[in-house]
Length: 243
Image 1 (tube, rainbow, N blue to C red):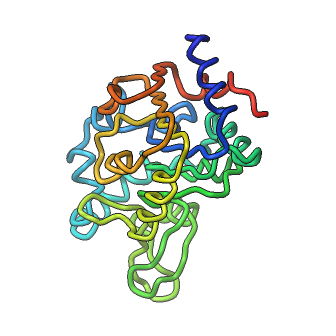
Image 2 (image 1 turned 30 degrees about the vertical axis):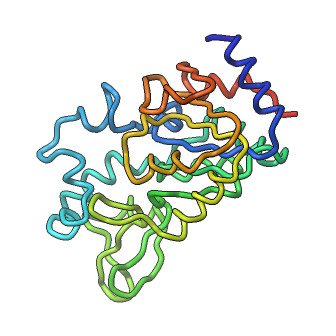
């Protein structure tokens, strides 16, 4: 681990009380949740259909059994625990340094770690609703259901509150994320290659002082960053002191 860069990150964090963190799948891989694009990610696994097809709106509607087989197996990691990145970000929020976490993840680990202001661009596996009557169901109900989970009240199909391919992002969450990012003094981006739009486009709204990228691989924004760290994000944050 590059301790010189860790020291630079510590200095940036210590010097700001208006930090926004923008994170992707790489934030949760150290908690045992697979990402999509790495060598052992979901896109490299062999299924009858590619993952981006399975987790699309039209596939959910036309082949709900296939959708839920993949979803329960690969996207419901209900035993996963927050890692050092989640925990330290929550501590930095409590210390008044981090104002918001904007995440592409759907696992709820930031909230589990104690973060309060979490903007979930792609929704959450922890919320599920009947497509017919709107009744709420938790993730355990979906996980334990035989085949396609059905509403106990009206018999409708229960759908996770996650943004599938072909679906639009929530406008209110998008505008709130834009507001936080455009007003931030420091933007720390972690665990994302910044290739998924429209989420990646939020970075264009940053006008602050320091842009930090923490990702194991290169990103589309490396050229404009003030600090780039290529170590695992949990290990990086384990070195950061909250003060």
